[in-house]
Length: 456
Image (tube, rainbow, N blue to C red; front, top):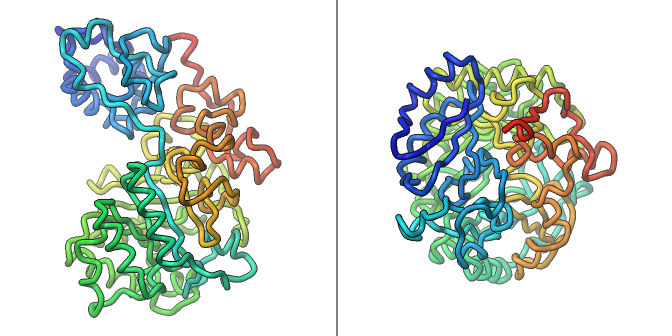
């Protein structure tokens, strides 16, 4: 169903959905008509329709990228790059070549206040400040890559980490994540986080919570904005089996309550979607969402190191439909956070509604510095692409440009309207399977891709 947007268009969400039901369509295409539409207020109404993404595909035809929020830009379909109105500032934007621009005449009517070039740089830099860990989880990235043999690797010095932080600030990147290993094993971790916070960065922390307690909880107050805590089971025995430590779950639950008590803005729980987790998803969700957490992330298992168990298409379907069912009874955010080919499911709308796709994997929006001083596209993608003190040069390396420009996508993926968000699933998994970056993700089923571009 097409919705032509002009001054007279009724963008009431219930009316649009009602029309879609009458027409029997599962896809809604919004198209701007002329310069007379106030784009910010228009987008607010369109976002309400996007909330129904598990039921309908919502597409924005030739919308300018900078008026669409970060998590909705994957809905843009550009048929005519550069057909609309741009100015010199647009050249600063990472989407300059692929953006249609604003409707002709928009700047004259509304001015250029909505024009906001999107910098071509990572949104976040993740620093593995500590290679060691007191747990032995099978899904640990450093344990399955560069620290496969042992973790006897010197951590980055405090002075060097501060230099990286300074460079991040100079570049204009707004988010830093301290991770490991277990970052709280570093005696100077609070000093490093405070240094980053004093530089006005958003500070994120990944921790197993084993070293969080009532005696040190106030050290986190005011310097940590976002905390990610792994929980693999609602059973103490199963969590102990996963981590190699007794009372691991008890410590995590206690830490979550302490973090909430001191007012940490965002508390997230991450769970690897193992076969056991998928089969016990509702029980696991009741436990995790019963805690004072803001978001729950699930991850497709990455087949590296000790983790050889791969999910099947049937398990992916069970996981996605399970998440959607849980979302209907809770207001908390639940997401499948790492790369997944949406065509693993025969309903791509549903896959997209609960999955970030590959937006935050393979170096598309984030970058990692590991304890060796390597800059990498992602934790498990063990490829040194540059110097931690020159993040932008690493970001603009030939490999990274090919990755972000989707040059590693199989030809079939390029035809699908979901390619901007799904990005062919995991390029790491594709490479691991057959040694080619442009190979299909092992979970991909090209019989399910939707070839809409030709008919729009």
